[in-house]
Image (cartoon, rainbow, N blue to C red; front, side, top):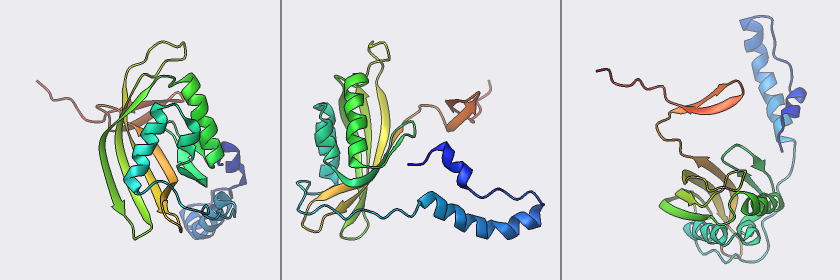
Length: 203
């Protein structure tokens, strides 16, 4: 998993002017990619079939597991070395870490929450890979003091793969909050805030 400490392993940025920077950029990029990848091999796909019959069925199963507060059922939808990036950029890199994170979340943040699907789409990338997107609304979150929080909406995207013996599992997932009336985020004093760059109409 990447952390800020990994930046120390990247080659230094040249400071000798534009030509030197341009000349070194190709070599540096290759080294950076190799460093960030870490040379780790991907695990083989699980043996045996999955109960998930289609890419969209995986999203439906995710919602059912969420509403039941069942971290084991949710994690079972992922391959062993799956990636999951949550709404604040936390990056989990295994089925075990995905299960652990969601079990903690169901206990502390979403103890009685419900997840509602508002929109679904899929794009097949051949016979064995698909990208799915789901717009969601979550109700029942609590704040750090245990008091009810307002509803949130967001978009969940996932890359799913068909297993050799049938069924589908998720390889990579990314969750994003919808920030109303915002175009992007702005960092001020280390605080990330949704911000709009559109000018309000003048009278």
